Length: 269
Ligand code: ATR
Image (cartoon, rainbow, N blue to C red; front, side, top):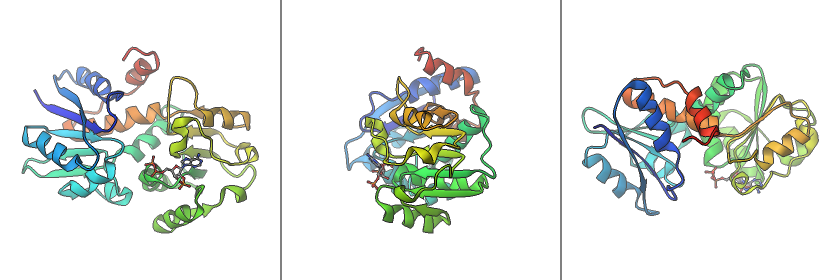
C-alpha cells in the first residue's frame, strides 16, 4: 500500500489523514496516510526515516515548513519563493522534491468556493510571517490591481513587499474602503487576536478571508463583517485545496474537493 504522512508538532489534531483518505476513496485507491510527530530540530531525521522506509510523499505543517524546504534535494519555484514547503515528493531516482501548495490552495478556495475573481482586485494581505510569505507569489500570479502587505511590525512587510514587488503599508495608514479582498495571515488569529486595523478599511470588502479556522467563525471574520465586509471565510477550504494539490502531485489524480469540505464542515470526518 502506498505510504504518505503529515509531519508537524503538534500533529494529533491534523485533519490531513481524513482528507487524504477521502481523496483516495474517490480515486478508488488504497493508501496509508499517517500523522508523524517530529521533535523540534529533528525534522530531517524523521523525514529521512520515513522515506527510507518506503514513504512516497509527505505533507509538512507547523513548525517544519522551513526545515522541509532546506532539507529537500530540489525545490519548485513556488517553494523557493516561499522559503517553505508543505509537500514532499519522492522522485523515481530516490531524491526528494519539495513544493508548496498553500498559495494555490488559497487561490483555488477563493475562486472555487466563493466564486470571487482575484484579477483586477485590490488585495490586502495582513501579516508578514511564513504563512503570508507562502501565498504572495500565487496571489500576484492572479494579476490583482494591487497587493498591499500590512504587518504589525512594518519593517517585515516592507521587506516582503520589496522581495516580491508588492506594496507595503502600516496598519494605521491603510486607506478607508481601500480593498476588495482582505486576507488575514497572522498567527494571532489562531488565539482570537484581531490585527489592530480600523474598521473603515473593510467597508468595500467583498471577501474577508482568514487563513485560520475553527468550529465557530473566527474573531477576524466577525470583526470584518461588523466592519462592513460583504462576506467572510475561514481557511478550512484552503486546507482542503492545498491537500488536493498535494494529492495530485503525488498520484496524478485531481480530487473533487467540495464533498470533502462539506464532510469537514458537518463534522463527519
Ligand atoms: P506563521 O508561520 O504562522 O506566519 P510567523 O512567521 O511567526 O508565523 O508570523 C506571525 C505573523 O503574525 C507575523 O506577521 C506577526 O506580526 P509581527 O511580525 O508584528 O510579529 C503576526 N501576528 C501575530 N500575532 C498578531 C497580533 N496579535 N496582531 C497582529 N499581528 C500578529
